[in-house]
Image 1 (spheres, helix red, strand yellow):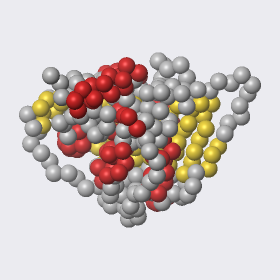
Image 2: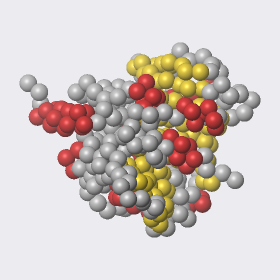
Image 3: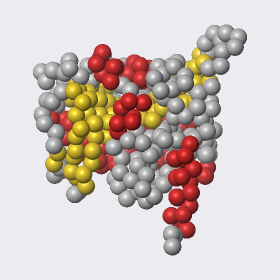
Length: 329
Protein backbone atom coordinates (compact mmCIF):
# COMPACT_ATOMS: atom_id res chain seq x y z
CA UNK A 1 0.00 0.00 0.00
CA UNK A 2 1.29 3.48 -0.84
CA UNK A 3 2.23 5.57 2.19
CA UNK A 4 0.03 8.57 2.89
CA UNK A 5 2.83 11.06 2.23
CA UNK A 6 3.61 9.44 -1.09
CA UNK A 7 -0.09 9.41 -2.00
CA UNK A 8 -0.27 13.16 -1.35
CA UNK A 9 2.78 13.75 -3.52
CA UNK A 10 1.25 11.59 -6.26
CA UNK A 11 -2.00 13.54 -6.25
CA UNK A 12 -0.30 16.94 -6.24
CA UNK A 13 2.27 15.96 -8.85
CA UNK A 14 -0.45 14.54 -11.10
CA UNK A 15 -2.39 17.79 -10.79
CA UNK A 16 0.66 19.77 -11.89
CA UNK A 17 1.63 17.38 -14.70
CA UNK A 18 -1.83 17.34 -16.25
CA UNK A 19 -1.89 21.12 -16.54
CA UNK A 20 1.80 21.66 -17.13
CA UNK A 21 3.98 19.44 -19.23
CA UNK A 22 6.60 21.73 -17.76
CA UNK A 23 6.94 23.18 -14.83
CA UNK A 24 2.01 30.97 -1.71
CA UNK A 25 2.45 33.01 0.92
CA UNK A 26 3.98 36.44 1.24
CA UNK A 27 6.75 38.53 2.67
CA UNK A 28 10.48 38.58 2.23
CA UNK A 29 13.50 38.51 4.44
CA UNK A 30 16.76 37.79 2.64
CA UNK A 31 20.14 38.78 3.90
CA UNK A 32 22.00 41.14 1.60
CA UNK A 33 25.45 40.17 0.38
CA UNK A 34 26.79 43.51 -0.88
CA UNK A 35 30.29 42.47 -1.84
CA UNK A 36 30.61 40.43 -5.05
CA UNK A 37 33.00 37.55 -5.08
CA UNK A 38 35.00 36.07 -7.89
CA UNK A 39 33.59 32.76 -9.16
CA UNK A 40 34.68 29.91 -6.98
CA UNK A 41 35.50 26.77 -8.91
CA UNK A 42 33.81 23.81 -7.19
CA UNK A 43 35.93 20.76 -6.43
CA UNK A 44 36.27 18.52 -9.43
CA UNK A 45 34.63 15.15 -8.72
CA UNK A 46 35.40 11.84 -10.29
CA UNK A 47 33.09 11.81 -13.32
CA UNK A 48 33.10 10.14 -16.70
CA UNK A 49 31.47 11.31 -19.90
CA UNK A 50 31.14 10.52 -23.60
CA UNK A 51 31.71 14.17 -24.48
CA UNK A 52 34.58 14.88 -26.84
CA UNK A 53 36.55 18.10 -26.54
CA UNK A 54 35.62 20.99 -28.86
CA UNK A 55 32.87 19.12 -30.76
CA UNK A 56 30.34 21.41 -32.47
CA UNK A 57 26.68 21.16 -33.42
CA UNK A 58 24.00 19.31 -31.44
CA UNK A 59 25.53 16.71 -29.17
CA UNK A 60 23.78 14.12 -26.99
CA UNK A 61 25.99 13.92 -23.93
CA UNK A 62 26.17 11.78 -20.82
CA UNK A 63 27.91 12.29 -17.53
CA UNK A 64 28.30 9.60 -14.90
CA UNK A 65 28.46 10.87 -11.35
CA UNK A 66 28.00 8.78 -8.22
CA UNK A 67 27.22 5.78 -10.45
CA UNK A 68 24.24 7.53 -12.05
CA UNK A 69 24.16 8.24 -15.77
CA UNK A 70 22.83 11.73 -16.43
CA UNK A 71 22.07 13.01 -19.92
CA UNK A 72 22.09 16.41 -21.58
CA UNK A 73 21.89 17.95 -25.05
CA UNK A 74 24.64 20.39 -25.87
CA UNK A 75 24.39 22.97 -28.64
CA UNK A 76 27.68 24.49 -29.79
CA UNK A 77 27.26 27.07 -32.59
CA UNK A 78 29.43 26.87 -35.69
CA UNK A 79 31.03 30.17 -34.69
CA UNK A 80 32.65 28.54 -31.66
CA UNK A 81 36.39 29.16 -31.51
CA UNK A 82 38.45 27.60 -28.77
CA UNK A 83 40.88 30.52 -28.86
CA UNK A 84 38.35 32.73 -27.04
CA UNK A 85 36.22 32.02 -23.98
CA UNK A 86 32.49 31.73 -24.63
CA UNK A 87 29.44 32.29 -22.38
CA UNK A 88 27.48 29.21 -21.27
CA UNK A 89 23.68 29.13 -20.87
CA UNK A 90 21.77 26.36 -19.06
CA UNK A 91 18.20 25.79 -20.28
CA UNK A 92 16.21 23.55 -17.89
CA UNK A 93 12.97 21.81 -18.90
CA UNK A 94 9.71 21.67 -16.99
CA UNK A 95 8.13 18.98 -14.83
CA UNK A 96 7.46 15.84 -16.85
CA UNK A 97 9.29 17.22 -19.86
CA UNK A 98 12.79 16.47 -21.18
CA UNK A 99 15.86 18.09 -22.69
CA UNK A 100 14.75 17.66 -26.30
CA UNK A 101 11.33 19.21 -25.71
CA UNK A 102 12.86 22.20 -23.96
CA UNK A 103 15.46 22.69 -26.69
CA UNK A 104 12.64 23.02 -29.21
CA UNK A 105 9.93 24.75 -27.14
CA UNK A 106 12.06 27.25 -25.21
CA UNK A 107 14.41 27.54 -28.17
CA UNK A 108 17.55 29.61 -27.62
CA UNK A 109 19.59 28.16 -30.49
CA UNK A 110 19.11 31.10 -32.85
CA UNK A 111 20.30 33.38 -30.05
CA UNK A 112 23.33 31.14 -29.53
CA UNK A 113 24.10 31.30 -33.26
CA UNK A 114 23.75 35.08 -33.41
CA UNK A 115 25.61 35.83 -30.18
CA UNK A 116 28.17 33.07 -29.87
CA UNK A 117 27.32 31.27 -26.63
CA UNK A 118 27.23 27.56 -25.78
CA UNK A 119 23.85 26.17 -24.79
CA UNK A 120 23.20 23.11 -22.63
CA UNK A 121 19.87 21.37 -21.97
CA UNK A 122 20.22 19.00 -18.99
CA UNK A 123 17.68 16.26 -18.32
CA UNK A 124 16.19 15.59 -14.90
CA UNK A 125 15.82 12.21 -13.24
CA UNK A 126 12.45 10.94 -12.03
CA UNK A 127 10.81 11.82 -8.75
CA UNK A 128 9.13 9.26 -6.48
CA UNK A 129 6.14 8.97 -8.82
CA UNK A 130 8.28 8.40 -11.93
CA UNK A 131 8.10 11.88 -13.47
CA UNK A 132 11.11 13.96 -14.48
CA UNK A 133 11.65 16.60 -11.81
CA UNK A 134 14.31 19.12 -10.80
CA UNK A 135 14.66 18.68 -7.06
CA UNK A 136 13.51 21.99 -5.59
CA UNK A 137 11.79 20.52 -2.52
CA UNK A 138 8.44 21.60 -3.88
CA UNK A 139 5.33 19.66 -4.89
CA UNK A 140 7.19 16.35 -5.18
CA UNK A 141 10.05 14.40 -3.63
CA UNK A 142 13.37 13.28 -5.07
CA UNK A 143 16.53 11.72 -3.71
CA UNK A 144 18.75 13.38 -6.33
CA UNK A 145 21.06 16.33 -5.71
CA UNK A 146 20.52 18.37 -8.86
CA UNK A 147 22.59 21.30 -7.59
CA UNK A 148 25.60 19.00 -7.34
CA UNK A 149 24.77 17.55 -10.76
CA UNK A 150 24.75 21.05 -12.25
CA UNK A 151 28.02 21.87 -10.52
CA UNK A 152 29.64 18.79 -12.03
CA UNK A 153 28.23 19.49 -15.48
CA UNK A 154 29.78 22.97 -15.33
CA UNK A 155 33.12 21.38 -14.49
CA UNK A 156 32.83 18.91 -17.35
CA UNK A 157 31.96 21.55 -19.94
CA UNK A 158 34.73 23.85 -18.75
CA UNK A 159 37.15 20.96 -19.14
CA UNK A 160 36.00 20.19 -22.70
CA UNK A 161 35.37 23.71 -24.02
CA UNK A 162 36.73 27.23 -23.78
CA UNK A 163 34.10 28.72 -21.45
CA UNK A 164 34.12 32.04 -19.66
CA UNK A 165 33.64 31.10 -15.99
CA UNK A 166 32.38 34.62 -15.26
CA UNK A 167 29.57 34.35 -17.83
CA UNK A 168 27.47 31.30 -16.94
CA UNK A 169 23.68 31.73 -16.87
CA UNK A 170 20.57 29.69 -16.11
CA UNK A 171 17.04 29.80 -17.48
CA UNK A 172 14.18 27.36 -17.71
CA UNK A 173 10.50 26.68 -18.15
CA UNK A 174 8.22 26.05 -15.16
CA UNK A 175 10.07 23.52 -12.94
CA UNK A 176 13.20 24.64 -14.81
CA UNK A 177 12.44 28.25 -13.85
CA UNK A 178 12.00 27.21 -10.22
CA UNK A 179 15.33 25.41 -10.45
CA UNK A 180 17.07 28.47 -11.92
CA UNK A 181 16.04 30.45 -8.83
CA UNK A 182 17.15 27.49 -6.69
CA UNK A 183 20.59 27.70 -8.31
CA UNK A 184 20.74 31.45 -7.67
CA UNK A 185 20.19 30.63 -3.99
CA UNK A 186 22.48 27.60 -3.71
CA UNK A 187 25.13 27.95 -6.43
CA UNK A 188 25.27 31.71 -6.87
CA UNK A 189 29.06 31.80 -7.08
CA UNK A 190 28.80 30.05 -10.44
CA UNK A 191 25.96 32.00 -12.09
CA UNK A 192 26.09 35.57 -13.37
CA UNK A 193 22.29 35.88 -13.81
CA UNK A 194 19.15 33.74 -14.00
CA UNK A 195 15.81 33.96 -15.81
CA UNK A 196 12.59 32.07 -15.13
CA UNK A 197 9.73 31.55 -17.57
CA UNK A 198 6.49 30.45 -15.84
CA UNK A 199 8.46 29.39 -12.76
CA UNK A 200 8.56 30.73 -9.21
CA UNK A 201 10.23 29.79 -5.93
CA UNK A 202 9.06 27.09 -3.56
CA UNK A 203 8.59 28.01 0.08
CA UNK A 204 11.60 25.85 0.93
CA UNK A 205 13.85 27.61 -1.59
CA UNK A 206 12.49 31.00 -0.55
CA UNK A 207 12.97 30.46 3.19
CA UNK A 208 16.46 28.94 2.93
CA UNK A 209 17.84 31.10 0.11
CA UNK A 210 21.32 32.35 0.92
CA UNK A 211 23.05 33.74 -2.18
CA UNK A 212 26.76 34.46 -1.80
CA UNK A 213 26.58 37.47 -4.11
CA UNK A 214 24.04 39.71 -5.86
CA UNK A 215 22.44 37.84 -8.76
CA UNK A 216 20.35 39.71 -11.36
CA UNK A 217 17.05 37.95 -12.06
CA UNK A 218 14.40 38.05 -14.77
CA UNK A 219 10.90 36.63 -14.41
CA UNK A 220 8.50 36.15 -17.36
CA UNK A 221 4.98 35.13 -16.37
CA UNK A 222 1.47 35.13 -17.79
CA UNK A 223 -1.63 36.53 -16.13
CA UNK A 224 -3.62 33.38 -17.06
CA UNK A 225 -1.11 30.82 -15.81
CA UNK A 226 -3.19 28.37 -13.79
CA UNK A 227 -0.39 25.79 -13.49
CA UNK A 228 1.99 28.10 -11.61
CA UNK A 229 -0.51 30.79 -10.57
CA UNK A 230 0.69 34.37 -10.45
CA UNK A 231 -0.62 34.73 -6.91
CA UNK A 232 0.99 31.48 -5.76
CA UNK A 233 -0.47 28.16 -4.68
CA UNK A 234 0.00 26.92 -1.12
CA UNK A 235 -1.02 23.33 -1.87
CA UNK A 236 1.84 22.99 -4.36
CA UNK A 237 4.30 25.05 -2.32
CA UNK A 238 4.54 27.89 -4.86
CA UNK A 239 5.26 31.48 -3.83
CA UNK A 240 3.43 34.44 -5.44
CA UNK A 241 5.46 36.02 -8.23
CA UNK A 242 5.54 39.47 -6.66
CA UNK A 243 6.88 37.91 -3.42
CA UNK A 244 9.68 36.39 -5.48
CA UNK A 245 10.47 39.73 -7.09
CA UNK A 246 10.38 41.45 -3.70
CA UNK A 247 12.84 38.89 -2.35
CA UNK A 248 15.37 39.62 -5.07
CA UNK A 249 14.78 43.36 -4.80
CA UNK A 250 15.87 43.21 -1.17
CA UNK A 251 18.63 40.67 -1.75
CA UNK A 252 20.15 42.76 -4.55
CA UNK A 253 19.41 46.07 -2.79
CA UNK A 254 17.40 47.46 -5.72
CA UNK A 255 15.10 50.45 -5.88
CA UNK A 256 11.36 49.86 -5.92
CA UNK A 257 10.08 48.90 -9.34
CA UNK A 258 9.04 51.30 -12.06
CA UNK A 259 6.11 49.98 -14.08
CA UNK A 260 6.04 50.57 -17.84
CA UNK A 261 2.82 50.02 -19.78
CA UNK A 262 2.63 49.80 -23.56
CA UNK A 263 0.13 51.64 -25.68
CA UNK A 264 -2.85 49.27 -25.75
CA UNK A 265 -5.05 49.42 -28.84
CA UNK A 266 -8.78 48.62 -28.67
CA UNK A 267 -9.35 44.90 -29.05
CA UNK A 268 -5.86 43.96 -27.87
CA UNK A 269 -5.95 40.74 -25.87
CA UNK A 270 -2.30 40.44 -24.87
CA UNK A 271 0.33 42.96 -23.85
CA UNK A 272 3.41 43.04 -21.65
CA UNK A 273 3.81 45.09 -18.48
CA UNK A 274 7.45 45.65 -17.50
CA UNK A 275 8.48 45.92 -13.85
CA UNK A 276 12.02 47.32 -13.71
CA UNK A 277 13.99 47.25 -10.46
CA UNK A 278 17.01 49.51 -11.00
CA UNK A 279 20.11 50.63 -9.09
CA UNK A 280 20.78 47.18 -7.69
CA UNK A 281 24.19 46.21 -6.33
CA UNK A 282 26.97 46.17 -8.93
CA UNK A 283 24.91 48.43 -11.25
CA UNK A 284 22.53 45.60 -12.12
CA UNK A 285 18.75 45.44 -12.37
CA UNK A 286 15.96 42.91 -11.97
CA UNK A 287 13.25 42.63 -14.64
CA UNK A 288 9.75 41.17 -14.50
CA UNK A 289 7.69 40.83 -17.68
CA UNK A 290 4.03 40.31 -16.83
CA UNK A 291 2.29 39.06 -19.97
CA UNK A 292 -1.42 39.81 -19.94
CA UNK A 293 -3.47 37.07 -21.57
CA UNK A 294 -0.69 34.45 -21.46
CA UNK A 295 -1.09 31.06 -19.84
CA UNK A 296 1.56 28.50 -18.92
CA UNK A 297 3.65 29.12 -22.04
CA UNK A 298 7.04 30.32 -23.28
CA UNK A 299 5.93 33.56 -25.00
CA UNK A 300 7.51 33.90 -28.41
CA UNK A 301 7.90 30.15 -28.97
CA UNK A 302 6.75 28.96 -32.38
CA UNK A 303 4.53 26.54 -30.45
CA UNK A 304 2.96 29.23 -28.24
CA UNK A 305 -0.23 31.15 -28.93
CA UNK A 306 1.37 34.46 -27.92
CA UNK A 307 4.41 35.60 -29.91
CA UNK A 308 5.33 38.71 -27.94
CA UNK A 309 7.46 39.19 -26.00
CA UNK A 310 10.10 37.03 -27.64
CA UNK A 311 11.22 35.39 -24.40
CA UNK A 312 14.39 33.84 -25.82
CA UNK A 313 15.57 37.15 -27.25
CA UNK A 314 14.68 39.09 -24.10
CA UNK A 315 16.46 36.56 -21.90
CA UNK A 316 19.70 36.80 -23.84
CA UNK A 317 19.50 40.60 -23.95
CA UNK A 318 19.23 40.49 -20.16
CA UNK A 319 22.04 37.95 -19.67
CA UNK A 320 24.39 39.69 -22.08
CA UNK A 321 24.67 42.73 -19.80
CA UNK A 322 26.21 40.86 -16.88
CA UNK A 323 29.12 38.76 -15.74
CA UNK A 324 29.68 37.35 -12.27
CA UNK A 325 30.73 40.76 -10.95
CA UNK A 326 27.78 42.75 -12.30
CA UNK A 327 27.53 44.96 -15.37
CA UNK A 328 30.12 44.04 -17.98
CA UNK A 329 32.57 46.91 -18.25
